[in-house]
Image (cartoon, rainbow, N blue to C red; front, top):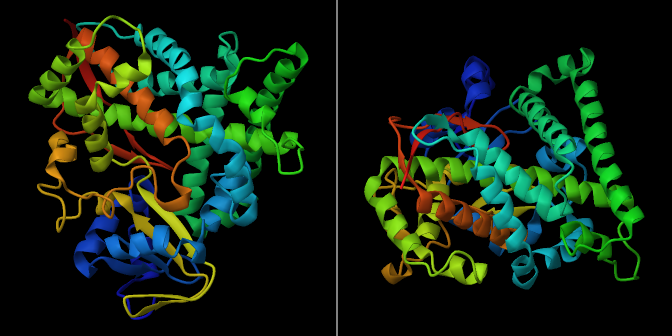
Length: 441
Protein backbone atom coordinates (compact mmCIF):
# COMPACT_ATOMS: atom_id res chain seq x y z
CA UNK A 1 0.00 0.00 0.00
CA UNK A 2 1.37 3.35 -1.00
CA UNK A 3 1.92 6.32 1.33
CA UNK A 4 1.91 4.19 4.47
CA UNK A 5 4.31 4.89 7.35
CA UNK A 6 7.29 2.54 6.95
CA UNK A 7 9.62 0.81 9.41
CA UNK A 8 13.11 0.74 7.94
CA UNK A 9 15.37 -2.29 7.47
CA UNK A 10 17.75 -0.68 9.94
CA UNK A 11 15.07 -0.61 12.66
CA UNK A 12 14.26 -4.26 12.00
CA UNK A 13 17.91 -5.28 12.16
CA UNK A 14 18.53 -3.17 15.26
CA UNK A 15 15.66 -4.95 17.05
CA UNK A 16 16.39 -8.39 15.59
CA UNK A 17 16.99 -10.13 18.94
CA UNK A 18 13.73 -8.86 20.42
CA UNK A 19 11.83 -9.74 17.22
CA UNK A 20 13.26 -13.27 17.21
CA UNK A 21 12.20 -13.82 20.82
CA UNK A 22 8.79 -12.12 20.66
CA UNK A 23 7.79 -9.76 17.81
CA UNK A 24 4.48 -8.65 19.42
CA UNK A 25 5.90 -5.72 21.46
CA UNK A 26 7.66 -4.47 18.30
CA UNK A 27 4.38 -4.71 16.38
CA UNK A 28 2.47 -2.94 19.17
CA UNK A 29 5.03 -0.15 19.37
CA UNK A 30 4.65 0.54 15.65
CA UNK A 31 0.85 0.31 15.70
CA UNK A 32 0.79 2.89 18.49
CA UNK A 33 3.29 5.03 16.62
CA UNK A 34 1.82 4.82 13.12
CA UNK A 35 -1.83 3.78 13.48
CA UNK A 36 -3.72 0.75 12.16
CA UNK A 37 -1.71 0.21 8.96
CA UNK A 38 2.04 0.45 8.40
CA UNK A 39 4.75 -1.19 6.32
CA UNK A 40 7.94 -2.97 7.34
CA UNK A 41 10.99 -3.37 5.12
CA UNK A 42 12.38 -6.88 5.62
CA UNK A 43 15.26 -8.10 3.50
CA UNK A 44 15.55 -6.93 -0.09
CA UNK A 45 11.97 -7.58 -1.19
CA UNK A 46 8.89 -5.38 -1.16
CA UNK A 47 7.75 -3.99 2.20
CA UNK A 48 5.35 -6.12 4.21
CA UNK A 49 2.07 -4.45 5.23
CA UNK A 50 0.97 -4.88 8.86
CA UNK A 51 -2.60 -4.09 9.86
CA UNK A 52 -5.04 -4.25 12.75
CA UNK A 53 -7.66 -2.23 10.85
CA UNK A 54 -10.97 -4.14 11.28
CA UNK A 55 -12.33 -2.91 7.94
CA UNK A 56 -9.24 -3.95 5.98
CA UNK A 57 -9.12 -7.35 7.70
CA UNK A 58 -12.79 -8.01 6.84
CA UNK A 59 -12.13 -6.78 3.29
CA UNK A 60 -9.29 -9.29 2.81
CA UNK A 61 -10.72 -12.31 4.64
CA UNK A 62 -14.37 -11.99 3.60
CA UNK A 63 -15.51 -9.31 1.16
CA UNK A 64 -12.68 -9.66 -1.39
CA UNK A 65 -11.21 -13.00 -0.35
CA UNK A 66 -10.94 -14.18 -3.98
CA UNK A 67 -8.29 -11.50 -4.57
CA UNK A 68 -6.03 -12.89 -1.86
CA UNK A 69 -4.20 -16.15 -1.28
CA UNK A 70 -2.26 -17.64 1.58
CA UNK A 71 1.23 -16.20 1.24
CA UNK A 72 4.50 -18.08 0.56
CA UNK A 73 5.10 -17.95 4.34
CA UNK A 74 2.66 -20.87 4.48
CA UNK A 75 2.45 -22.26 0.95
CA UNK A 76 6.24 -22.52 0.58
CA UNK A 77 8.01 -22.13 3.92
CA UNK A 78 5.59 -24.02 6.18
CA UNK A 79 4.61 -26.44 3.41
CA UNK A 80 8.15 -27.70 3.00
CA UNK A 81 7.88 -29.19 6.50
CA UNK A 82 4.23 -30.31 6.67
CA UNK A 83 3.18 -30.68 3.03
CA UNK A 84 0.51 -29.13 0.81
CA UNK A 85 -2.74 -29.76 2.65
CA UNK A 86 -5.73 -27.50 3.25
CA UNK A 87 -3.72 -25.23 5.58
CA UNK A 88 -0.87 -24.60 3.13
CA UNK A 89 -2.46 -24.60 -0.33
CA UNK A 90 -4.40 -22.19 -2.53
CA UNK A 91 -6.82 -22.11 -5.42
CA UNK A 92 -8.40 -25.24 -6.85
CA UNK A 93 -6.06 -27.55 -4.92
CA UNK A 94 -7.31 -26.02 -1.66
CA UNK A 95 -10.99 -25.99 -2.69
CA UNK A 96 -10.91 -29.64 -3.79
CA UNK A 97 -9.30 -30.94 -0.62
CA UNK A 98 -11.32 -28.70 1.68
CA UNK A 99 -14.46 -30.31 0.23
CA UNK A 100 -12.97 -33.75 0.90
CA UNK A 101 -11.80 -33.07 4.46
CA UNK A 102 -14.72 -30.94 5.71
CA UNK A 103 -17.29 -33.78 6.03
CA UNK A 104 -15.08 -35.39 8.70
CA UNK A 105 -15.75 -32.35 10.91
CA UNK A 106 -19.51 -32.02 10.43
CA UNK A 107 -21.42 -32.00 13.70
CA UNK A 108 -22.99 -35.43 13.11
CA UNK A 109 -19.54 -36.97 12.57
CA UNK A 110 -18.09 -35.22 15.62
CA UNK A 111 -20.82 -36.68 17.84
CA UNK A 112 -19.32 -40.11 17.12
CA UNK A 113 -15.88 -38.91 18.22
CA UNK A 114 -16.94 -37.32 21.51
CA UNK A 115 -16.60 -40.56 23.46
CA UNK A 116 -13.04 -41.05 22.18
CA UNK A 117 -12.31 -37.41 22.97
CA UNK A 118 -13.66 -37.65 26.52
CA UNK A 119 -11.77 -40.89 27.28
CA UNK A 120 -8.49 -39.36 26.04
CA UNK A 121 -9.03 -36.22 28.13
CA UNK A 122 -9.76 -38.17 31.30
CA UNK A 123 -6.74 -40.42 30.80
CA UNK A 124 -4.36 -37.46 30.48
CA UNK A 125 -5.87 -35.51 33.40
CA UNK A 126 -4.79 -38.34 35.71
CA UNK A 127 -1.34 -36.69 35.49
CA UNK A 128 -2.57 -33.80 37.65
CA UNK A 129 -0.88 -33.84 41.05
CA UNK A 130 -3.24 -32.28 43.65
CA UNK A 131 -1.90 -29.79 46.20
CA UNK A 132 1.28 -29.15 44.21
CA UNK A 133 1.94 -26.24 41.89
CA UNK A 134 2.70 -27.58 38.42
CA UNK A 135 3.19 -26.20 34.93
CA UNK A 136 -0.08 -27.15 33.27
CA UNK A 137 0.98 -26.25 29.72
CA UNK A 138 2.99 -29.44 28.93
CA UNK A 139 0.05 -31.50 30.20
CA UNK A 140 -2.36 -29.58 27.96
CA UNK A 141 -0.01 -30.17 25.02
CA UNK A 142 0.05 -33.91 25.65
CA UNK A 143 -3.70 -34.00 26.20
CA UNK A 144 -4.49 -32.16 22.96
CA UNK A 145 -2.03 -34.30 21.01
CA UNK A 146 -3.53 -37.52 22.36
CA UNK A 147 -7.06 -36.34 21.55
CA UNK A 148 -6.06 -35.74 17.92
CA UNK A 149 -4.07 -39.00 17.72
CA UNK A 150 -6.89 -41.15 19.10
CA UNK A 151 -9.56 -39.35 17.07
CA UNK A 152 -7.48 -39.89 13.93
CA UNK A 153 -6.33 -43.45 14.51
CA UNK A 154 -8.53 -44.92 17.24
CA UNK A 155 -5.49 -46.67 18.76
CA UNK A 156 -3.80 -46.79 22.17
CA UNK A 157 -0.67 -48.73 21.16
CA UNK A 158 1.25 -46.08 19.20
CA UNK A 159 2.40 -43.83 22.04
CA UNK A 160 6.09 -44.06 21.15
CA UNK A 161 5.43 -43.13 17.52
CA UNK A 162 3.25 -40.24 18.63
CA UNK A 163 5.90 -38.94 21.05
CA UNK A 164 8.44 -38.91 18.23
CA UNK A 165 6.00 -37.19 15.88
CA UNK A 166 5.27 -34.53 18.47
CA UNK A 167 9.00 -33.94 19.06
CA UNK A 168 9.63 -33.49 15.33
CA UNK A 169 6.70 -31.07 15.07
CA UNK A 170 8.17 -28.93 17.87
CA UNK A 171 11.76 -28.76 16.57
CA UNK A 172 10.72 -28.09 12.98
CA UNK A 173 8.49 -25.25 14.18
CA UNK A 174 11.44 -23.61 15.93
CA UNK A 175 13.51 -23.88 12.75
CA UNK A 176 10.75 -22.34 10.66
CA UNK A 177 10.42 -19.42 13.07
CA UNK A 178 14.15 -18.73 12.73
CA UNK A 179 13.80 -18.68 8.95
CA UNK A 180 10.79 -16.35 9.01
CA UNK A 181 12.12 -13.87 11.56
CA UNK A 182 15.71 -13.85 10.32
CA UNK A 183 15.35 -14.03 6.52
CA UNK A 184 18.74 -12.31 6.16
CA UNK A 185 20.36 -15.45 7.65
CA UNK A 186 18.61 -17.95 5.38
CA UNK A 187 21.73 -18.36 3.24
CA UNK A 188 23.58 -19.45 6.37
CA UNK A 189 20.88 -21.93 7.41
CA UNK A 190 21.24 -23.55 3.97
CA UNK A 191 25.03 -23.47 4.03
CA UNK A 192 25.40 -25.04 7.49
CA UNK A 193 22.89 -27.80 6.70
CA UNK A 194 20.21 -26.84 9.27
CA UNK A 195 17.38 -26.70 6.74
CA UNK A 196 18.42 -30.01 5.20
CA UNK A 197 18.52 -31.65 8.64
CA UNK A 198 15.02 -30.47 9.48
CA UNK A 199 13.70 -31.64 6.12
CA UNK A 200 14.99 -35.10 7.07
CA UNK A 201 12.99 -34.84 10.30
CA UNK A 202 9.92 -34.01 8.22
CA UNK A 203 10.50 -37.07 6.05
CA UNK A 204 10.74 -39.17 9.21
CA UNK A 205 7.37 -37.87 10.45
CA UNK A 206 5.77 -38.83 7.14
CA UNK A 207 7.31 -42.29 7.41
CA UNK A 208 5.83 -42.73 10.92
CA UNK A 209 2.36 -41.83 9.66
CA UNK A 210 2.72 -43.98 6.56
CA UNK A 211 3.43 -47.07 8.68
CA UNK A 212 0.25 -46.44 10.70
CA UNK A 213 -1.81 -46.00 7.52
CA UNK A 214 -0.35 -49.22 6.02
CA UNK A 215 -1.23 -51.10 9.20
CA UNK A 216 -4.82 -49.83 9.01
CA UNK A 217 -5.19 -50.86 5.38
CA UNK A 218 -3.66 -54.29 6.07
CA UNK A 219 -6.02 -54.89 9.00
CA UNK A 220 -9.13 -54.41 6.87
CA UNK A 221 -10.79 -52.77 9.88
CA UNK A 222 -13.20 -49.86 9.72
CA UNK A 223 -13.18 -47.75 12.88
CA UNK A 224 -15.16 -44.70 11.78
CA UNK A 225 -12.36 -42.45 13.07
CA UNK A 226 -10.92 -39.49 11.18
CA UNK A 227 -8.46 -41.68 9.27
CA UNK A 228 -11.30 -43.87 7.97
CA UNK A 229 -13.18 -40.77 6.86
CA UNK A 230 -10.12 -39.51 4.95
CA UNK A 231 -9.49 -42.93 3.42
CA UNK A 232 -13.11 -43.04 2.20
CA UNK A 233 -13.01 -39.49 0.78
CA UNK A 234 -13.20 -39.35 -3.01
CA UNK A 235 -12.56 -36.84 -5.78
CA UNK A 236 -15.39 -36.08 -8.20
CA UNK A 237 -14.16 -38.85 -10.52
CA UNK A 238 -14.42 -41.40 -7.70
CA UNK A 239 -10.69 -41.79 -7.03
CA UNK A 240 -9.22 -41.55 -3.49
CA UNK A 241 -6.50 -39.19 -2.34
CA UNK A 242 -2.96 -40.16 -3.27
CA UNK A 243 -0.85 -41.44 -0.38
CA UNK A 244 1.26 -38.28 -0.46
CA UNK A 245 -1.81 -36.07 -0.25
CA UNK A 246 -3.27 -38.18 2.54
CA UNK A 247 -0.02 -37.81 4.49
CA UNK A 248 -0.12 -34.03 3.91
CA UNK A 249 -3.65 -33.77 5.32
CA UNK A 250 -2.96 -36.03 8.32
CA UNK A 251 0.26 -34.18 9.18
CA UNK A 252 -1.52 -30.84 9.04
CA UNK A 253 -4.35 -32.13 11.26
CA UNK A 254 -1.73 -33.15 13.82
CA UNK A 255 0.18 -29.89 13.65
CA UNK A 256 -2.75 -27.48 13.62
CA UNK A 257 -5.14 -29.67 15.57
CA UNK A 258 -3.28 -29.95 18.84
CA UNK A 259 -1.20 -26.77 19.17
CA UNK A 260 -3.97 -24.20 19.02
CA UNK A 261 -6.10 -26.15 21.50
CA UNK A 262 -3.26 -26.64 23.98
CA UNK A 263 -2.40 -22.95 23.84
CA UNK A 264 -5.98 -21.78 24.40
CA UNK A 265 -6.44 -24.23 27.30
CA UNK A 266 -3.22 -23.06 28.94
CA UNK A 267 -4.15 -19.38 28.87
CA UNK A 268 -7.79 -19.99 29.88
CA UNK A 269 -6.80 -22.15 32.87
CA UNK A 270 -4.51 -19.35 34.03
CA UNK A 271 -7.39 -16.85 33.91
CA UNK A 272 -9.72 -19.19 35.81
CA UNK A 273 -7.05 -19.74 38.47
CA UNK A 274 -6.42 -16.01 38.75
CA UNK A 275 -10.04 -14.84 38.76
CA UNK A 276 -11.82 -16.88 41.39
CA UNK A 277 -15.24 -15.36 40.71
CA UNK A 278 -15.12 -16.60 37.11
CA UNK A 279 -13.94 -20.00 38.33
CA UNK A 280 -16.83 -20.19 40.80
CA UNK A 281 -19.37 -19.41 38.05
CA UNK A 282 -17.83 -22.14 35.89
CA UNK A 283 -17.97 -24.63 38.80
CA UNK A 284 -21.62 -23.86 39.54
CA UNK A 285 -22.43 -24.48 35.88
CA UNK A 286 -20.63 -27.86 35.91
CA UNK A 287 -22.18 -28.88 39.23
CA UNK A 288 -25.68 -28.45 37.78
CA UNK A 289 -25.09 -31.11 35.10
CA UNK A 290 -27.17 -34.27 35.49
CA UNK A 291 -25.36 -37.60 35.76
CA UNK A 292 -21.79 -38.58 34.99
CA UNK A 293 -21.93 -39.13 31.24
CA UNK A 294 -25.03 -39.60 29.10
CA UNK A 295 -25.38 -37.51 25.96
CA UNK A 296 -22.00 -35.75 25.70
CA UNK A 297 -23.18 -33.23 23.11
CA UNK A 298 -26.09 -32.30 25.37
CA UNK A 299 -23.65 -31.80 28.26
CA UNK A 300 -21.53 -29.51 26.14
CA UNK A 301 -24.62 -27.45 25.25
CA UNK A 302 -25.30 -26.97 28.99
CA UNK A 303 -21.97 -25.19 29.56
CA UNK A 304 -22.34 -21.74 27.95
CA UNK A 305 -20.30 -19.91 30.60
CA UNK A 306 -17.34 -22.26 30.17
CA UNK A 307 -17.55 -21.63 26.44
CA UNK A 308 -17.47 -17.87 27.09
CA UNK A 309 -14.36 -18.29 29.25
CA UNK A 310 -12.67 -20.08 26.33
CA UNK A 311 -13.79 -17.42 23.87
CA UNK A 312 -12.43 -14.69 26.12
CA UNK A 313 -9.15 -16.58 26.59
CA UNK A 314 -8.79 -16.79 22.80
CA UNK A 315 -9.62 -13.10 22.48
CA UNK A 316 -6.79 -12.07 24.77
CA UNK A 317 -4.36 -14.69 23.49
CA UNK A 318 -5.48 -15.87 20.04
CA UNK A 319 -3.58 -19.03 19.05
CA UNK A 320 -3.37 -17.85 15.43
CA UNK A 321 -2.17 -14.38 16.38
CA UNK A 322 -1.25 -13.28 12.83
CA UNK A 323 -3.00 -14.14 9.55
CA UNK A 324 -1.09 -13.76 6.28
CA UNK A 325 -2.43 -13.07 2.79
CA UNK A 326 -0.89 -11.98 -0.50
CA UNK A 327 -2.77 -10.02 -3.17
CA UNK A 328 -3.05 -12.03 -6.40
CA UNK A 329 -4.36 -8.99 -8.31
CA UNK A 330 -4.50 -5.24 -7.84
CA UNK A 331 -7.02 -4.15 -5.20
CA UNK A 332 -8.09 -1.02 -3.36
CA UNK A 333 -9.32 -0.28 0.15
CA UNK A 334 -10.52 3.05 1.50
CA UNK A 335 -8.89 4.93 -1.37
CA UNK A 336 -5.52 3.18 -0.89
CA UNK A 337 -4.18 0.97 -3.68
CA UNK A 338 -3.03 -2.55 -2.82
CA UNK A 339 -0.81 -3.65 -5.72
CA UNK A 340 -0.61 -7.25 -6.83
CA UNK A 341 1.88 -9.33 -4.76
CA UNK A 342 1.48 -7.16 -1.65
CA UNK A 343 2.04 -9.30 1.45
CA UNK A 344 -0.35 -8.36 4.28
CA UNK A 345 0.07 -9.57 7.86
CA UNK A 346 -3.13 -9.08 9.86
CA UNK A 347 -2.56 -8.88 13.61
CA UNK A 348 -5.38 -10.79 15.29
CA UNK A 349 -3.66 -10.17 18.64
CA UNK A 350 -3.96 -6.39 18.17
CA UNK A 351 -7.47 -6.56 16.69
CA UNK A 352 -8.71 -8.58 19.68
CA UNK A 353 -7.54 -5.73 21.95
CA UNK A 354 -8.75 -2.92 19.69
CA UNK A 355 -9.47 -0.09 22.11
CA UNK A 356 -12.07 1.53 19.84
CA UNK A 357 -14.33 -1.51 20.13
CA UNK A 358 -13.62 -3.68 23.19
CA UNK A 359 -14.62 -2.49 26.63
CA UNK A 360 -11.57 -2.77 28.96
CA UNK A 361 -9.70 -4.61 26.17
CA UNK A 362 -6.91 -6.03 28.38
CA UNK A 363 -9.30 -7.39 31.03
CA UNK A 364 -10.60 -10.97 31.25
CA UNK A 365 -14.40 -10.58 31.03
CA UNK A 366 -16.17 -13.75 29.80
CA UNK A 367 -19.54 -12.02 30.21
CA UNK A 368 -18.83 -9.86 27.16
CA UNK A 369 -19.62 -12.92 24.99
CA UNK A 370 -23.10 -13.38 26.49
CA UNK A 371 -25.45 -13.18 23.52
CA UNK A 372 -27.91 -11.27 25.72
CA UNK A 373 -25.60 -8.27 25.45
CA UNK A 374 -26.43 -8.13 21.76
CA UNK A 375 -22.99 -6.94 20.64
CA UNK A 376 -21.79 -8.00 17.19
CA UNK A 377 -18.18 -9.23 17.30
CA UNK A 378 -18.00 -10.31 13.66
CA UNK A 379 -15.49 -7.69 12.51
CA UNK A 380 -13.30 -7.78 15.61
CA UNK A 381 -13.00 -11.44 16.55
CA UNK A 382 -11.17 -14.10 14.51
CA UNK A 383 -9.96 -16.87 16.87
CA UNK A 384 -10.25 -19.46 14.06
CA UNK A 385 -9.60 -17.16 11.11
CA UNK A 386 -12.42 -15.88 8.93
CA UNK A 387 -14.17 -16.20 5.60
CA UNK A 388 -14.08 -19.39 3.49
CA UNK A 389 -10.72 -20.35 5.02
CA UNK A 390 -11.92 -20.44 8.60
CA UNK A 391 -10.38 -23.38 10.47
CA UNK A 392 -12.15 -26.60 9.45
CA UNK A 393 -11.68 -28.06 12.95
CA UNK A 394 -13.06 -25.16 14.99
CA UNK A 395 -16.01 -27.14 16.41
CA UNK A 396 -13.76 -30.11 17.22
CA UNK A 397 -11.43 -27.79 19.16
CA UNK A 398 -14.27 -26.04 21.03
CA UNK A 399 -15.86 -29.33 22.11
CA UNK A 400 -12.48 -30.60 23.29
CA UNK A 401 -11.77 -27.46 25.30
CA UNK A 402 -15.23 -27.36 26.91
CA UNK A 403 -14.94 -31.02 27.93
CA UNK A 404 -11.43 -30.51 29.31
CA UNK A 405 -12.32 -27.46 31.40
CA UNK A 406 -15.51 -29.04 32.73
CA UNK A 407 -13.55 -32.13 33.84
CA UNK A 408 -10.92 -30.01 35.61
CA UNK A 409 -13.24 -27.43 37.19
CA UNK A 410 -15.62 -30.13 38.40
CA UNK A 411 -12.86 -31.91 40.37
CA UNK A 412 -10.38 -29.21 41.40
CA UNK A 413 -10.18 -25.68 42.71
CA UNK A 414 -7.48 -23.80 40.81
CA UNK A 415 -5.02 -21.29 42.30
CA UNK A 416 -1.98 -19.49 40.95
CA UNK A 417 0.64 -17.10 42.29
CA UNK A 418 1.45 -15.86 38.79
CA UNK A 419 0.52 -12.27 37.99
CA UNK A 420 0.76 -12.79 34.24
CA UNK A 421 1.76 -15.44 31.71
CA UNK A 422 4.76 -14.78 29.50
CA UNK A 423 3.99 -15.29 25.82
CA UNK A 424 6.04 -17.46 23.47
CA UNK A 425 4.91 -16.59 19.93
CA UNK A 426 6.02 -19.27 17.46
CA UNK A 427 3.79 -20.40 14.59
CA UNK A 428 1.02 -20.16 17.18
CA UNK A 429 0.85 -18.08 20.35
CA UNK A 430 2.02 -20.26 23.24
CA UNK A 431 2.36 -19.56 26.97
CA UNK A 432 5.89 -20.17 28.33
CA UNK A 433 4.56 -21.77 31.51
CA UNK A 434 1.32 -21.79 33.47
CA UNK A 435 1.90 -22.62 37.13
CA UNK A 436 -1.30 -23.78 38.80
CA UNK A 437 -2.05 -25.50 42.10
CA UNK A 438 -4.95 -27.99 42.00
CA UNK A 439 -6.91 -28.56 45.20
CA UNK A 440 -9.34 -31.49 45.24
CA UNK A 441 -12.96 -30.33 45.68
